Length: 419
Image (tube, one colour):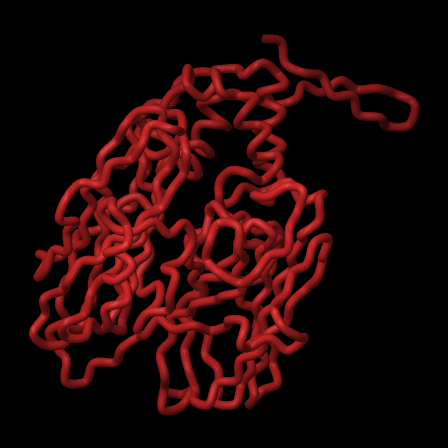
C-alpha cells in the first residue's frame, strides 16, 4: 500500500512529506493487547477473540465504531476528573489512530519478534487459601441470548469471626461470567429470597433487593484477568454469616453452565489489625433536593450529601444506577482544609458496566468533611436506553424497570488524619 502524502505549506511552495504508515503490528496490536485482550480472547467473555491480525482486521470497522463512541473499552470514568487505578481507556489520539488504520485499509505490516500475542493478565501469586467458598451446584444459563444476573447464597459455616487479607474470585465459565460482587449477610434475608426462586440462587439483575451487613464487600470484573484483592487493611467476615455472590452473566446462544468459586486467605496478625468495611455512602435518604420521583418526561438531577463524624480513608466508590441514569459525579470538601477533592465522574453512565473504582491513593478526609453526590436521570422518550418506551413513571427499587440512587464505598475509620 502506498503511503499517504501530506503537503506542508510554506509561503507559496508545497513540499510533499510522506506520512508515517500505520500498521497492525507497530501501532494497533499494542493497543489491543493492553485494552482488549483481557476480555477478548478465546473462550473468554468477550464476544469475539482479538488475538491476531486476522481476527482484529475482520472486526476493524466494529472496533473503530465502538472505540470512537466510547462503548469499548468499558471504562466509564472521566480520566481528567480524578486519579484512579487501573485505567482502561483510550486517549483521543489512540482512538483516531485506530480509525485511521481502518480507513487506510487495515495494513498488516511486519511482525515484531518477542511481542506477546496472547491475553495480558495481571498475574499475582495467591497464597494457599484457608477457605474456598463454592457454588453447591452448577447454574444453567439459557440459550435465549439474554443477559442476566443471579445471587448465590453460600453459608460461611464460620464458628468465629475471621479477618481476610486476600480474596480471589475464580469464574467457573469464562465465556459467560462478566462480573461478581460479593456481599456479607449476617441474617437470613438472602436465604429467604433464595427460597422464593425455583432455580439455584435468586434472580436479581442489579442489586441484591436489600442492603446486607456489608454491601459490595468485594468485586471482580472480567477485564481484571487473574487479579485479586489485597490491601494493607483486612476485611471481616462475622461468624455464622452468609456470602452473597452476585454474578452477572453475558448473553449466550447456547446453554451454558457455571460453577464459580471464591478463595479466601485469613490474616494472621490480628492483634493490631485495622479493618476496612464496605458501606453505603449515599442512597435516597441522603437527598437534599426532594424525594426520589422520576415522572414521565423528567430530566433532572438529584443531589445528596454525607457528612462524616470521624476521619476516614476512602479506598473505593461504586455508584449504582439503572437505565434512566445518565451520569454520576462524586466529590468531597475537607472540613480542615476547605479543599475540594474530586473522587469520581462518569459522564455517560451505562447500567451494563457497574464497577468499583479505586483512587490512585486512599482519599483522607478529616472529621466533619462532607461528601457530595450528583446523578442525572432522563425519563424522556429521547433516552433509548430505557427498558420501557414510551416512558412510564419510575419508582425507586432494584427491578429492571425501577431506578437506583446508591453509592457504596470501602472505608477505613481513623483516629486522626495523621494516623
